[in-house]
Length: 527
Image 1 (cartoon, rainbow, N blue to C red):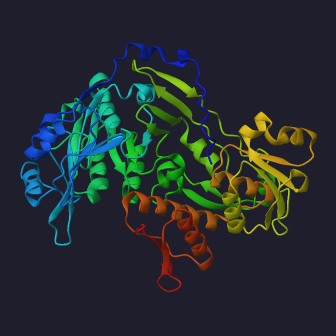
Image 2: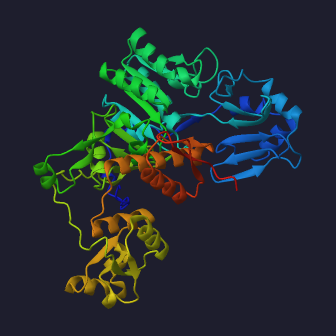
Image 3: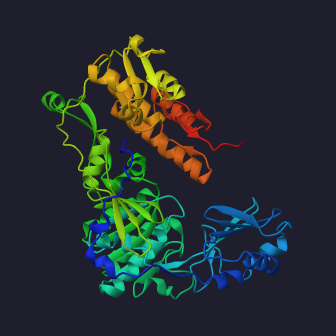
């Protein structure tokens, strides 16, 4: 697990001097063209909201009140519900919906997505505001100029597509490179045959349907001799394979992918090839002893397609893994990963909040177990969630007993902040060596489980790791996309672990099919 971020600011003198001359952000949103396709009563209500520079989207669902959504709130635009006439009014004034139920307004970056009923009739619209923001790349401009392959990760709404758009313009206009934008949903370069000026002199290749994105990626590199290819939302294994093909041909590849963090990506069985893929490797006895691990371990099986991973924490803050290979290797060995954290300043420059830290060498000594898993132990927990401890005890199979005094315990578990401040006489206990004292950075289930594994010397098999990673990736898809996800067929023990993952995410699951094809399906909540 990556170490929690240390956000103690380092002097802004660490900023690159070249950034001093950069301008502050400039925003072009063509909002009047989006307002023009809305029904008059809704448009008038929206205009009364005043400053619309933060407007994210307008939602029109049949039979419900129309909504305007902003980063930190939403407002109803009318007490009158949306009618069939309102839906038809918008649909008649925009481009055609393609197979992924998205359309646009020609000459703009706005996107209109529809929801259909079972007979295919449109019953809902999400009208998302598209903005060309100039200056949004300043925070990672040195990385963009490096010529390396870059993957942007982040939750929806943090500006991944906006950054891709400006990266295309900078590389094409300022550096004169041959740039091809593979534009699956016309979000980067807008709707219509003429690309939006936000991508500058970069060329745009449209994709007829989402499942054709990988083919267009390969077509771009084979037919048009680009120096740079830019792709939004790599989400299928075919696209991950196409990305590797592009990288192997010496073309700079800059893309976004499904997943908020590098750890999410490593856990995604469909996309982990973007960072080298994962394989189970059996070590020799000597090598296992040198590493201090079991003989079968998880390792990266190939060089990553992308050299640098940029996690977009929010619109003004990023975490940068400058060496994707080392970061992935550290994650697979269970070592902390500390990326560089940058924050954008109002003048367009940035400051470094956390410097990157190189992962430890794999030969570093691994701590051995302190207590027996079978016998369990007595723990005095100070400031640590009793609920997390009880759950971890059950899932890991450790007979754990919580006691009310450190004198009655086999070990003490607390938070780093409590230990530093000397709460509960913990520092004295640790310094005198009366009891083993373990401190975790934050009071989360993940941290609790991790420290118990260390204390009791518990490690999963590679098969268990892969099954759990697949279930975790599926659970995140279920939460984000509100649809069931079917997992790969596995044996009963691994299915049990996958059901436990679903339970941890508070999602229902069931096993379907017959052996040896019996598998777990994780469903969205219907509450």
